[in-house]
Image 1 (tube, rainbow, N blue to C red):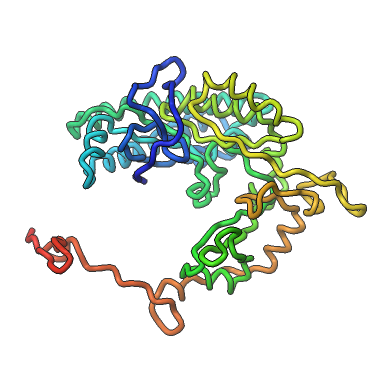
Image 2 (image 1 turned 90 degrees about the vertical axis):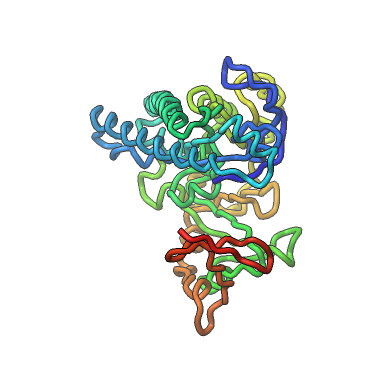
Length: 393
């Protein structure tokens, strides 16, 4: 993906031990890319957990072969992102920065799944495997970038790697987002949509919970989707959730990825318990200012005393959902019990989007895309609002 990004925040340091160029004054809104003024984000995402062999009975040889496959994926991702960076824009100041930097961000996602499946984090094995893959992968990216740059007759990219927040793309790969732990074993994922979105009727017909968005009730709705973090299976508890991770461990994980992978930045939202960790925010920023380029914090939902008939023991299985008090309405993620997850799931049925995307009786009409570019022996090139030129091959 390549998109414009407004300067956001201040960046003073490069990777650990490296001074950032003076022109790098900010980052994109999600803060995984260090940027100059007028510069674009150019990002591509990889999922190392998808390369791991089955965790039970995995041999050293199998792990080494998996790493080689992972590095091949990185090469393909780099080729794609580098190719995108070659395309000029209609804005000369942006083109000047692109020509000078060729900045791209090859990102990793599903990191917590990788650590869990590569040996776990309690004994440090999974983390050490991640370090090995990150360092060897980064070295290979640098080597391949030099070769590609020479072939394309452009300068090597000033920076190559990032860690995206990946709140959306990771869903397509069934991965945990970026470096983050899952919100809970069972949770609601809320998605905002325009009130006139063509896909909305299909979701309503499938009994997805849909409600007006707070603060924009006329134009936006919120769709709730029940999620099981690692599948609804008995072994899913091997993957820890945010309830089991302190603010300090999240900060250490972000600094680990900044040191061993990202030469751009690591997008990280640290959740904290306001009652026990809120007083330490200033100290945490003071310590980690030397290890991170940017970070954001979000308070965790507060727990109210449970009702007489419920207990917080086994909160991820059959807890009272009312014991969690959300700090803001319609939070993107909300922890729920296993009971509520199955109740929501049983009330839903598979959504049929065919009527929303195709023409026919009862279907929502979609605008027909203009027939442009190459067709047979000619290429249509729009010249003005009322005229079209044709270029023969």
